[in-house]
Image (cartoon, rainbow, N blue to C red):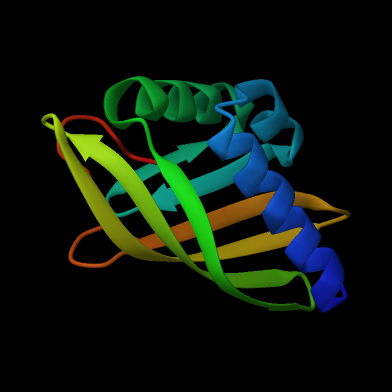
Length: 124
């Protein structure tokens, strides 16, 4: 997969995420995609839907792309996530590693600076 294609997959994912378009997010994943953030792991579109719907309601996250490196079915991205936790705005640098096949995300592993875990159910 070319770097431009890998970046396009990530940009579509981030756009759907920021629009809180759960259907659009799910359309960017394979049926059996796996998502890992900190200690949280989910697999399949049903669990991904629960993850994103819960995160949008709990912490109202938004992502910004800082840089992307991609090729050979893997996209590595430096991102920044803005969210609200306990009524306070929080900004967290994150790194995401996405496995992509045929233009869809097969799996993602997310590392958030400090801790990838969000208190009280964020998970995304």
